[in-house]
Length: 145
Image 1: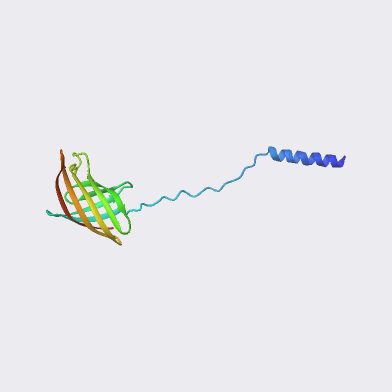
Image 2: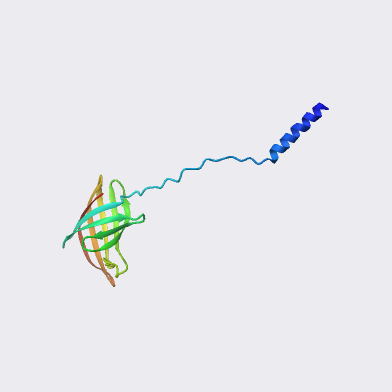
């Protein structure tokens, strides 16, 4: 009889263990690491064409650079290429003519060579009319960050 009682006791213990809910405390996870931008937050730029030299600040907003020049112009600078050797940007002006610097008919292509935290390159400005490009100018540009 004692053997049967031991078996019954083991059965009851096992049955009660399977009926129990097991609670495991999980340590809280650290917050996800926020990835920093692969691009500089601020670029200071200078460009010279056939007419004048202008200076600008380009501020990274997470999607593109928002640039503003010392002549009041503003534009979006789309990054096409940016690595430790070469850069390429497309300049698009605001589509809203009510916004200062909203010269909607100007586009520009900036290409350059990277030297540490400095860029030297060429820029091509293209002005558009209602039927396509109407005028083009080329110049040089440089930038630091």
